[in-house]
Image 1: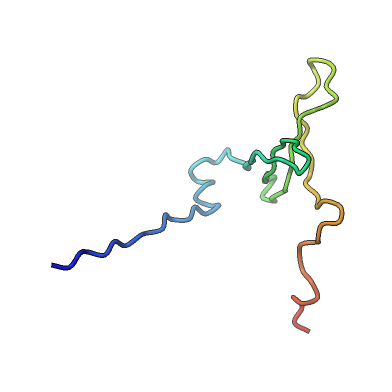
Image 2: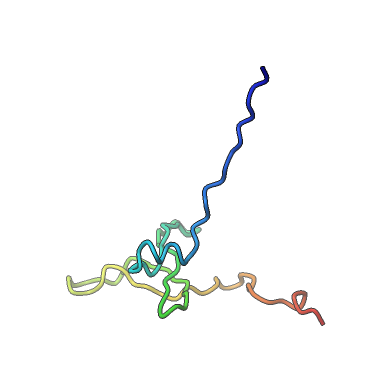
Length: 94
């Protein structure tokens, strides 16, 4: 008797609609990252009114009083000198 072949099945990919249906209060996700200089920060996306925004979150290094925030959220921008992402001349069909 020949051995049975094991078929590996991929887990279903969660769609944005499915994630939203499971938890309608979820507006985004963050990942802990580390910069090339060793600074730890969070990076991810936040959805506001259906529009997804890339954000980064850094510890507030200027906190002097308890009522000041522990972390500051910024809109994520490409690092200076980093190649631009998006449509290039090669993507235009004419």
